[in-house]
Image 1: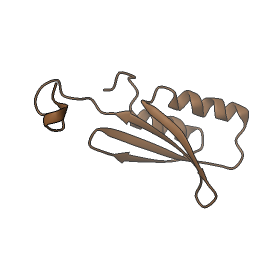
Image 2: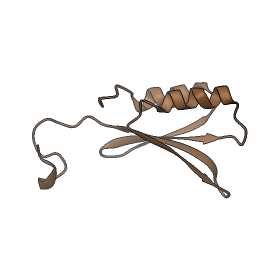
Image 3: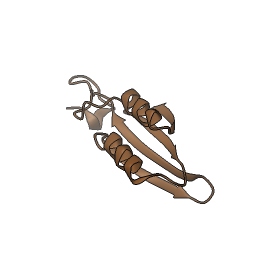
Image 4: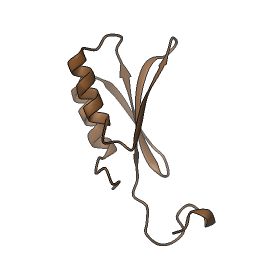
Length: 92
């Protein structure tokens, strides 16, 4: 589990509870969570959304005319403490 202690599933559930449509994608070193944001969001809901993503390892907002607004967050997966961690240049 990452240092933040946040799981991607918990983050997606929190955003879903706020009424947002979420998508979770697994990657080799992290899990990403995306949520579609409606055009209008109350100030209170914005605060709740920011509270939800704050513990993530990274987060941001992608806004385009064609795709609307997408909130994204990344939660790193735990890294083994021994062995080959992603190749010769990534060993501890």
